[in-house]
Length: 407
Image 1 (cartoon, rainbow, N blue to C red):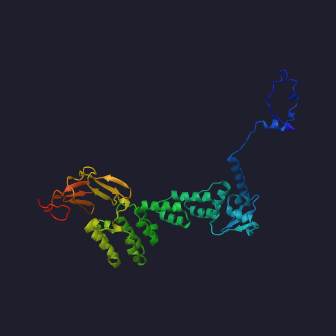
Image 2 (image 1 turned 90 degrees about the horizontal axis):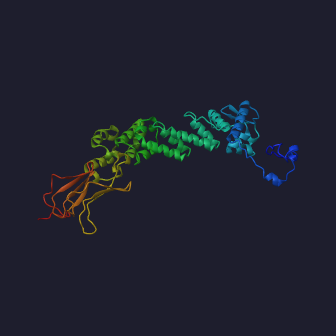
Image 3 (image 1 turned 180 degrees about the vertical axis):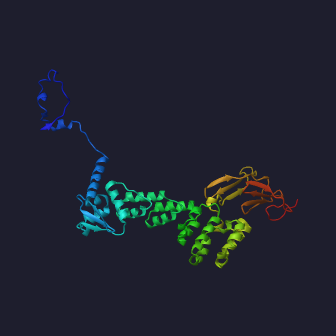
């Protein structure tokens, strides 16, 4: 017998009054008739599972139906094996296999904090956790131990949002210890971008030598001037000078001493007592002196500007001629290997001449001589983007710079 719910019928309608359906509410129907009926696929949504979890959490508070007690640092947490196993593969392996813990009422877990265990169980039974700066480290380690990836990732995201010059180095060390590559990379990028501020905090002084070298060697280090790097290195060394003095040469090897202002180099660097008593550093000092005298003629890894300074080594092409006709061209252009872009500079004056000589002096360019027996010397000023005629022309006109040409 099947109960059929149909539409209401008007008893006044002729033919209906005596219908068997009026007298009976239960019909014999076959399967074909039943298949044609409307079906309501009802789902209460997340509220159903949330309601069950809420009841289980109330059971936990009242110790109702609990079948295991987790002991952490002497503090006991009554729980349900089924709930723990459903949420954590760690507990599933513990309770569902033939382990000793699967048969015992009291299970002791070492290596975690009781406060972190309390927050962890709150998440297991409610799906919510309060993550703070005080508990994030312990809660992360607890969720990692019990293999709760969602809570573990939430802790990592919280740490990333808390990055500050005073804590980014410590968070990076924590991330490296737990193989959090994304967080570690984010910390390193943050420290590089805020190095001037980071170097003023206590965590900076606790860096290992290799960690400090990795930072100060990077072209991505964001600083206004190279003096910031030198002062950070000295501050780190002087913090524990007896043990760190032997590392001074290795650290200065990554400081771009040639790019320091000449006055600062003479007064501060060469005047530092620690450096004066470190003969192993003299070669680096000599390299900086030579650069201050010779400019770009003296090249080394320490003469390469960092990207944050706004300077970069470029290739400059001066002049040239058309492929057809051989007309001389006035264009001066530079190519930046880092960005892969060409940039137009000020046009070369007197471009009708050719076969002149070009050389670089520090950050400027000199052009002299030419086929028309020119005595002029032009200098390109990189700061002004301007060609300036020298007030000291050559004694005789030069061509190819193989010797003078006489009129």
